[in-house]
Length: 141
Image 1 (cartoon, rainbow, N blue to C red):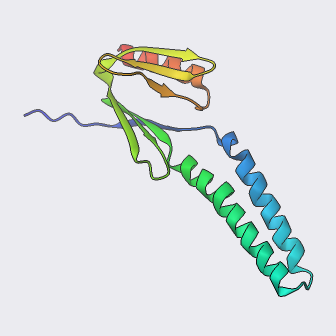
Image 2 (image 1 turned 90 degrees about the vertical axis):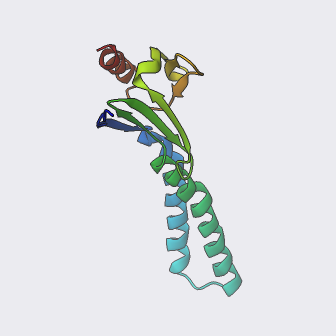
């Protein structure tokens, strides 16, 4: 029995600029709460503002940030592992030996062609063109 040890070469996440809208919503909610805390309003207005801002923060900031944190691609010495979703439950593994081609297109991102299946598409990664070239050089060895 042979045992091949696997090392993680890199973990790549999507670019951080995808969270600009989430941070804008968070800023607006904090601004609204700071504005209302300095004045005395009726109880129903205060409860409504707290409820709406809490709901906005959960839906438009917490969930996208959580999804961003759990979406990543691991490049190891033996395989490429892509995890997507709120709890990183959607997992796709591609062994390095079954990769036939690595292409970069501006609209789709990095397309990794697999010998016996559908291609793995990695979109939204920072410096995707440079990453595709580095992957070509690394997997060609």
